[in-house]
Length: 81
Image 1: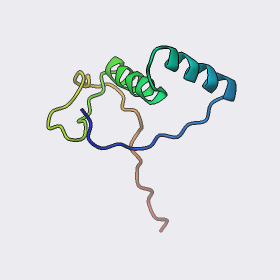
Image 2: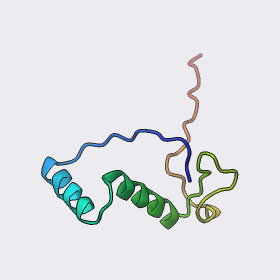
Image 3: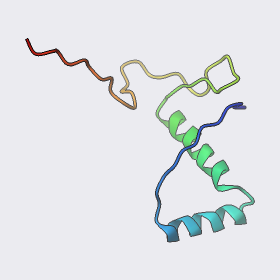
């Protein structure tokens, strides 16, 4: 179980948000619980590992060799001479 938390802010259509909150309430879940589960499933689906805060071992399947990362690394720009 994660010990630390970080805030994720997103914009969504108000009607879609209300429908999502109603569905969560019907299932006795909070919207945060559902979003956290969706994130865990999405990471697992793409083979991305991570170490939850407060844990010493990676969670989820190992990253496949040669698979693309979520964000490409930035390269340094050369100074003009």
